[in-house]
Length: 313
Ligand SMILES: [Fe+2]
View 1 (cartoon, rainbow, N blue to C red):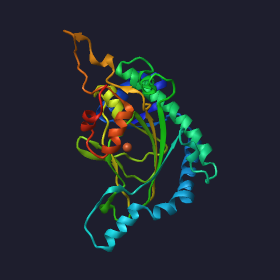
View 2: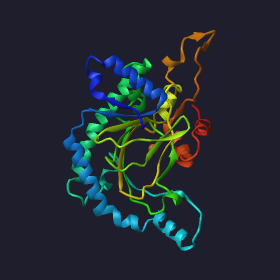
View 3: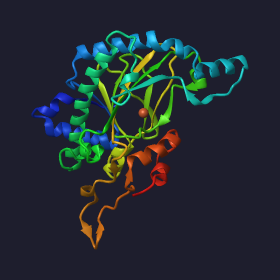
């Protein structure tokens, strides 16, 4: 069991139509699938794994040992408490984006160069995945990317979260990452080859996103749900702590610019019948920055109220 796997090389061959249909099905029914033969070289992926692990050892591990989740867990154990830690995650995480590139970890040899090369490749893969979604949804080529750019070319947000989940002696007392849906557009995740922990909710059942060496997991965020008028849905997922093994997780987010306006795509609302779209918009039209303000307050709560709370334009 696990999530579906797509041989992405087939989108460029004679099985293109079948592969696109599969991807459309997985977007509608799963919101999570993983790509093999995606075109990112094994050499680059091996180097990314190496520098990310070295970076954690050299620049992050000491800090984690004194971090809030570790302190809170130690307190619970000292007090023999049966309580569970609910507001903190057993996770070390930092963000790499073009905007914060002076803050990227700088002590690990090769880290910055390798991660820049990786991000360039992942961004291209993100474009390709979004163009397939355009085609599957019947939208003009580039519709999702242009919407995320908000009318100013190449201003969509692209960020990479590098996370490590160290082994946890009491996984029953803390979450590694609480359940949430992702706020933005398309997420491209390079997860650990061996250490599991990520689960997505499929038909009410927590399902493992199974480690598969050098694959890239794709999942869709809240803005793809809005833009597709609910045909594609963002899906709850979480990370469960593991007692053995340290999980590495490198998630790249292709999100709208904070200034971009997001709404159900008009071509998906059907023809007008008696002055009304035949398939009415199920979501409001809003500015993504306003949505993020709501999301930052409500990330770990159900998503539906966020669409009500955001200021409509
Ligand atoms: Fe997430």
